Image (cartoon, rainbow, N blue to C red; front, side, top):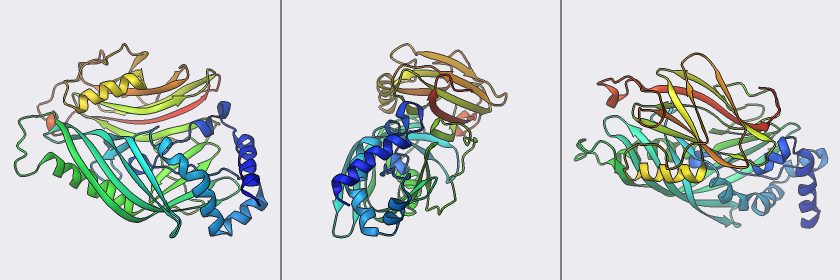
Length: 374
């Protein structure tokens, strides 16, 4: 089969398989590997004969990835953020937002090195919010397998080429004594070794189905699927995120960015809050990036630089839902556990600096047709 024939097959099958709203599966595909990495591979699940040929041929799978998947990695990397956790399997306490990326294809050993970097924030006990930048280079060996109802994509780490290297932009609590443990060292030990190095060394799995892409650290074998706090098995909505975050007093968390690509689409959000009530504000990505960059550089928390598109309060009262009919674009949903952004004033607690009064929010974000039931 010639390269041109494969390209035409990919185009036709992508079109045929786009069951999501207005073709959102291809345009809204997420890149949710560690620090935001996901592989967008050729979706050709409609042809059993072709599936069998590809599954039986490692060289053909590599050819498909290096020609059709590799070029999508950096563009997709920029579309998302990666949660940071103080302990494996815990709640998110910060995020990393990639903003630079390069790839190198190694034909001789059929691997690819991803050089990536970006900025982010993380809440830490006593120090509060820390803003940082980070860079790393990881060599992956990619493979995938096509099934009737899913495509399994595996990235097995060949080697950690460089890093992760952290640089601190700001520390919220200036009174904290970092003489014996610098912020950069703390970040490297907590998020670098634990999340970026050790978990990257475990590789990752992306499961692509008609419901979207699901990411998990480690290698899953069919029919295993990543575990999520919400059930998203019903309907045709595209799942952006399904996670749990921990927002401490005086802090905000930027969920997203989430992309709406068509005027007939809406963003569907579900929340479940444990702890104090929090406010949520919806803003354009550009506004959010500007706001977030200031906080990461040490600016005091205050309202966003532009008026939010909408806002609402989340109470600890079971599952709450919001359908956001937004124009095409990319958006953040910012959760606020402070008295400086939304109308809610969280109760003061003298132990807030070490974790008291944190709000834990389980959430799922999906995109679908505006008239989808919800």
